[in-house]
Image (spheres, rainbow, N blue to C red):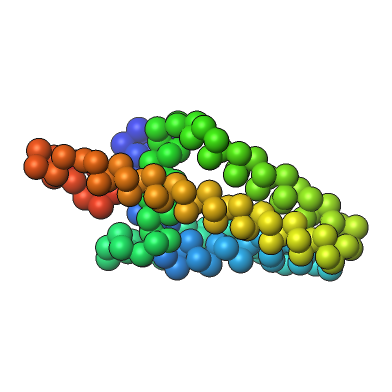
Length: 158
């Protein structure tokens, strides 16, 4: 694929994914998958995975970047593009991964309590991670010298 087409597709993905409806509707994916595993509803599991895959393209670009979930996506984009390891903050992602694996394991064993706790812990750690990422992102935006650089809300020069 041509680099300009790839760059345009990537930009479109992130712009549309920044719509708060995209981010908030994706929060239902883990509970839906855990439920699907627990109840052996494989079509629901496949549907949840497909929804998560196409979700970023289902919504239009947001009108502004004021919504918290929009900031989550913009902060995640910046983090992924910079390749920053985030130090201790990365441990929230590690904990999230372990909690998710445990949630699926418990769901597979039909342990409703374990699946619920694992899913809840995973989502709590994910929200803690993205909240910290947003705080960091907003701090970066605040530190930009707006007198010398005009920038849009996600910090890219115009």
